[in-house]
Amino acid sequence: IPNGVDTKFFYPLGNRTIDNIFRFIFVGRLHSQKNLIYLLDQVLLFKKKLNNNFTLEIIGNGPQKKELIQHSEKIGLKNNVLWTDWVNKRQLLQKYQSADCLLLPSLYEGMSNVILESMACGLPVVASDISANRAVIKNGKNGFLFNINRPFQLQKAMELLVVNQKKRKEIGSSARDFVVREFSWDLVAKRYLKLL
Image (cartoon, rainbow, N blue to C red):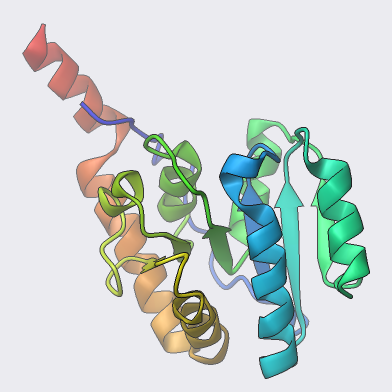
């Protein structure tokens, strides 16, 4: 029985992008497992290629935080990367609802609650192509998966979501529909009751 998500609490809130700033977010523990040095390096390449007005907000805490901040400043992302400590559930909902895309480049994961929550909010997800993520994300339909050894796949997905608003909305809507249909708390509760 998979993790579930409260699809009544986590829900979309209309158009996200305001003031022409595209908002990427990452939510999670700042640990080597999450592959964030890699992410920052890829975001730098994305910035050089597209030169769009965007931010990446990294939400969370962990042992790598100081190293990550120093690295982002060293490579020239100081004005693009925002750092936010852990937030409460209501604040996290607002973060999802005001973002345009969740990035999750983890080397390994269990079933990610962050992915389920963001998809429930109608947020397109771009995540590493690992087994746990494949259980939720259907590549090109309700999100995007990328091979960490082929970073151009990450760049391509990020670029598509930035430049193609229609596709971004389609992916977000499909993501919401999928988690409501497959991972809502009501459905998970029924599976537990059936098992018991």
